[in-house]
Image (tube, rainbow, N blue to C red; front, top):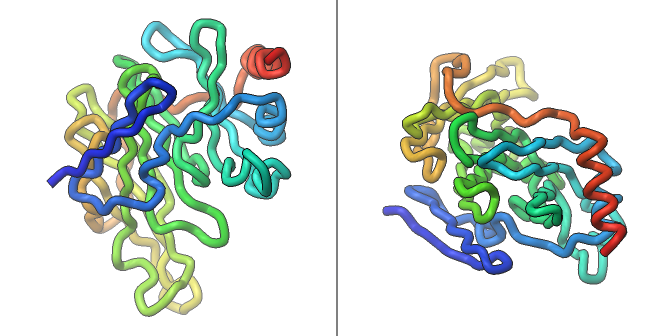
Length: 248
């Protein structure tokens, strides 16, 4: 049975839907809004940022990363503010959000036919986490839902071996059906290492996902509506964000 949790994000409602999946401790923090300050923007710009210029359905946004070692993340009001950070521009103003607290971005997509935005994250501090978080917004990033996709039980059997899934592809068609394909290297410290593949399915535009199913081999992406956002943000977007933060 699906479990649904709703939280308020600065007046917007964020619903977390975890159909058939265990509720993860960080799930409550889906798309958490944080204060937008000049230092936050400067810290995010210390690494390359991705950017989407916007269209009639989805506003312009930037996607960056905040190191957990940055000074503001170690003390004061900024403690715990690290990982993927999303800057959204609406009506000339910028706002800042954490898609999933402390997790790093693996991939981000926008739909070619709707206001759908998907960001996939993964915990990567002090060893890899054991799940993906799929953040999904269907209203132009006014609110979001997060689904936690636990990794297969075949990983790390007999003790921790640093085995984790790598995201290989994600695609959804116009009817909302799609799949996430991932692989893992098992037995890396043995003479019998092998790469194995798994698939997660969705039938409702990434709102909920199946449990992982083992595949006999690699799978190519299928056609669909998801378009990866550009790997490099435009200088104009970066300057707009920095100027807005400096003027506050």
